[in-house]
Image (cartoon, rainbow, N blue to C red; front, side, top):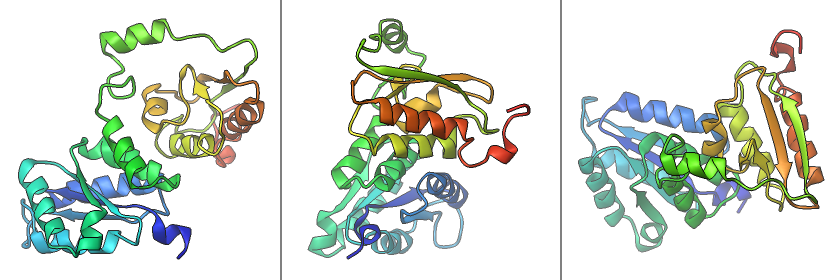
Length: 247
């Protein structure tokens, strides 16, 4: 069985077909190799949920690594849980409904799955989207206090400042590419003090074209990771031809 076949799949359940489709599309932009299926609306295409549609999505999204379900409202959650109960024992054991926020949870889960995370890691990533971390509550007093008192990079570490040149800034697809590359290194990496392996924390920085990003690692062996990530930003994420004017 290939790596792709054992990755965790994701199912998006919403009372609105358009919402489910939109969340699937957004998460899919971050994780093109992950099976993400939407099950929105009732059987007639109106608002509601459809047991058969959710069941089909659960079957289609589970290719061996399990499936995580994100749902919007209480009855959508109940429909998903009921559909899971009707799966065979093996599939049922690797299906999970998350209470994470629909959009943020789906995006975080998709990136974790794209990075090769198992079901437990994907579940944890989805929950991190709404657990009160700086990425989920960047404007809270606690988050601001943490930002003010964040430790400096250790003297043995390495840092490099670069300018964001691609027109999207460090959002959405570029942020996902950055987080995926950062996850391939065993060292800790930060972007302007935020966790460089967390998509949501990177996106919360709001770095637009022309903004400066400091890539750093407190690890003495972090130079390779910092340079690779800084080079990725300077390259415009493969979109240099459409980079900001003058870059």
